[in-house]
Length: 520
Image 1: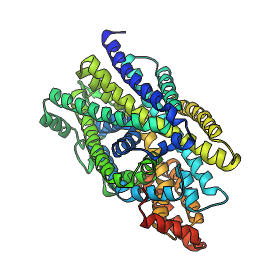
Image 2: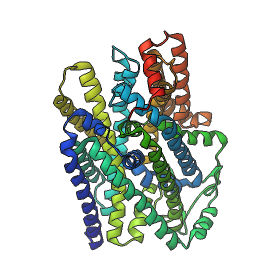
Image 3: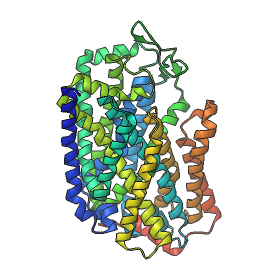
Image 4: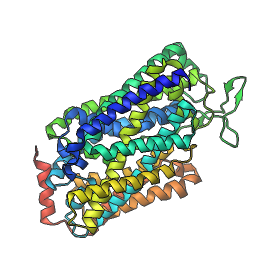
């Protein structure tokens, strides 16, 4: 092992030690009750709420997946995705946050499935069970993307076996999540969000300087057909194995492909996913005062806009500085690592690499904790053992977390997995399954329990059908599965609600109270 690698390891170990300290510090408070463990006792301040929400949302995808897309095929795909996400972030904080915080207090709910169930005052826990199952499925997929990120990071840094490195990263994340619960996770996510944006800023500044300035980066991008267009996309010339051709040291591209209005709308649809993201919605429920959500919104939007813009530009810088470093779509997601270790002193590179680890941990601990709570709180206690004590619920949560982690590791075994594609599928799943239901539950009094069930099932099913059966056909079916699934879910909620019995007086009273009152 070289001295540079040793310095990188030391810097990353310092970071990990700080994260573990946070987990230990908050572990006693986290274990006082399930409400503290799963929702932090509704005690988050505005800065922690905003930064932890966005850090847990973006994950290693921000530092590896998005720059990789920009590096591989240029501006369009990455930029329209970023624009959709920025718009979705703002609208979600503006419309959903206050109403959800009020409604969750009114219905005494500490998990998202519990909120849906209590919102419709169901006796047979159908909504609760279905939503908990979808959370288990999609968050397991999400967690696997984080484990892939860990594996790629350590494998690229130290030349070690991908699977071994992926498992080591997964073990660290799981141990930390078991220790601290939601509050520790949220506090550490706040610091991780800072590390992430600092890491992005350092790499983009140093990279731009080494590339000869912004003008040089743009000039190089313009030399590649479709690379710097919003309505065109670069087409790397690849062989049967997906490896890009290189001639005289230059990567080869075919003619630019069209990026039409339908594709733009499809990519912008990433923003719809925010309405159904449990890791973000839980922060709305956990803030200590509703009045602080306005400040949180501003903080979150500024962080997201800066981070997304810089991540996309890093991909363009990578094509200028390292045009042939990564010749497959999967390998292109290592461009942030390549730039960091190639341009920065070893110790500083170690802290930047900690930014990737921060992004991964801030997401995977959220995913695992929410998925575990969905089973232990909503299925185990909600269905099978209604008189379960807090201690039994938390024990079952930890057992579930371990089981889901093992499944996530199995999914992540393939080192050719593309982080962006894994995340896009899970994002679509949550966006279509929960997004429409959240909006209609908060803003339409006529929504019924049957409509809620129909909306969840139809949205989730369409995501799978579109992704696995229709999308491979290409053409109009090539759009991102979130868009059609979201629309179908909305239609089912409205139609089935109107065809079924009007909600009870108690449900309508809850709705009006959440609409009219500010609960502090």
